[in-house]
Length: 271
Image 1 (cartoon, rainbow, N blue to C red):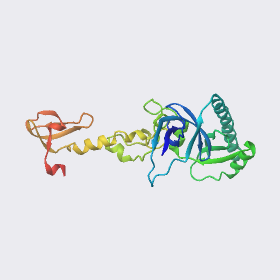
Image 2: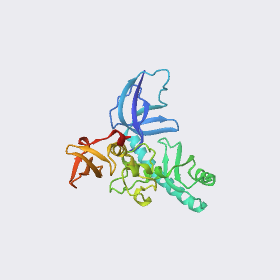
Image 3: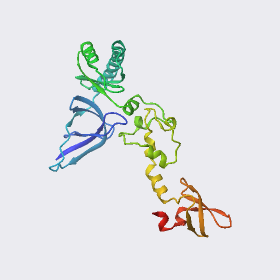
Image 4: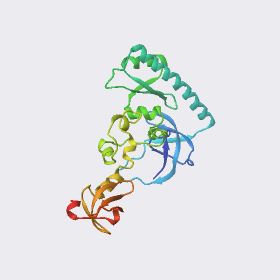
């Protein structure tokens, strides 16, 4: 049996799980964790719970070492200042070496045993000259990590077309596949400018209401289809997805709007 606690490194990142041992901790407690690549500082988002492991799952590779002290918080602030210097150094070295890459973030492990520099680029980049330059300047183990366009936007942050903070920066911890079909299903204008997010890819929010629109579209009669209404047979002239209603025209040219629940389609039309 293990006491497992859910930890998040920072806002918008997935929850990871660590062995809490006998330590008592509550939500929003800052803890020092032994991770695979060194020590890290995280925030408890799910309180410890006792887990009995079956034969198939493996216990988490992370271990909570202690609750963060005032000294740990001070060290974290020092790390942030050192990361800022490393970020500027990496960006300057990229310009000097004329490498086709964009430095996005520099991150020290809490114990400063490793520096991870994240960058964006179009295609593969030979970053070995940069790796050597950073290693000799910073005197620590440096790891360069190429990330995708969506991850670049997540780290940099900003505002979306809706005027709010980017979903990936504030709460979205997983990128799902987005397709142009989702925009078509919602009857959105198909244009690269209108559908692209800050990352230049299709906006993640296209998925949020996709399933609801798909269900409504399946139930929505086609224009020109003959349906049964409480007032008799009529022909569909407009379908209203948002309101989940249809406007129909009768033989006497009378036009009425009915909720989908009150409109009956023939079996042949549904097929």
